[in-house]
Amino acid sequence: MAATGEAAKPRVVICGGGIIGAATAYYLARTGGPEVARRVMVVEREAPACAASGKAGGFLALDWNDSSPVGPLARLSYRLHPQLAAELREQLGRDVGYRTVHTWQVVGVEAVPAGAKGGRLRGSEALPDWVDGNVMGSSEMGDTDSTAQVHPALLTRALLDGAVAAGARLVTGCVQGLQLEAAGAEEQGRRVTGVVVDGEVLPADVAVVAMGPWSDAARAWLEGAAAPGAVPHITGQKYHSVVLRPEQPVTNHMLFTGFKYASGRTVEPEVYPRPDGTVYVCGEPQALPVPPSPAEVVVEGQLIDNIRRVAGSLASCLKEAPVEAQQACYLPCAPDSLPVIGPVPGVAGAFLATGHTCWGILNAPATGLVMAEMILEGKAKSVDVRPFAPARFVRGAAGAGARR
Image (cartoon, rainbow, N blue to C red):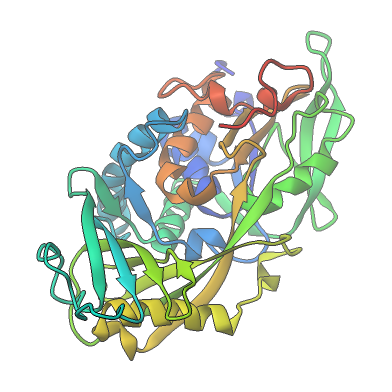
């Protein structure tokens, strides 16, 4: 794709308007210039950031993935986040809620054990005053050099707006499949020639499937064309969350909790204060089938109540805080719990970018950057993404299907 002229640039259709698709469109537009940007289209079924990209917490960590193959990707992406925040503020005047944070592990209980005092135990003095519940233990997990946060919905929408401002297009529609034809004489297999959206074919040389847990649809779209097993089964992990607005200010201390209800059940909700004064709290994971569309994700009131009970037990300012949002979303998971990033063997022009689990917001910038590199330059240059290639799932491939 090194030829000059707009006609030589690939026509790229990105399926999915979440943060992975948005970051891919942004970096294609930024690195490829106007000629590339005008040939990029993002197709979103509902609305940008309507699923996990708008309902996730936005916690970022520099080195928490160092023990897995995701480590280098995460480190690059962590460095890209403040750069993106500055760029989007300068270019669009948009605040994406980025800031560095303090991160703590907090052990709390709803009912104080017999013979123990309520409130915070000695040793928890470093916690901010607003964490005034029954804290049995605490320890620092990260500081402002190694942990940060962003508002996922604001970042996703700003990235898409940045791409559109550069010339890309955002289209509302349901992706129903890919149009494939026999590859040229110099290639084997099939190649992408279009993306089917609401019964119409959008011409394309490249199709990027970045639909979170709904990326699983690509298995049917590419069946018989891709190498056997190359398109993995993508599942979803469901989480509930609530956004509260306490009356008193809360500091930039993120809480990863271990909490025991009076009944004895233990849970691990996460509490993220945001720069806008709200507090995001999530938890209650469920392994459930992914519904047909984001609009059909069901919010269970009891699970929202459970999350609020934990938040109110740890911090009195959250107990009666008004609720600004109560929501649920599915996080995409591949069979080996690693991201799926790269070209689909057997189908020229078909790419997958999904399966990021709970680290999708963190790893979106680096994923978008390397996707742009692969599409425009033929290979990833900024970080090695070979561990995440769809080729690892091809039947008979070394290590295919292996878990971490």
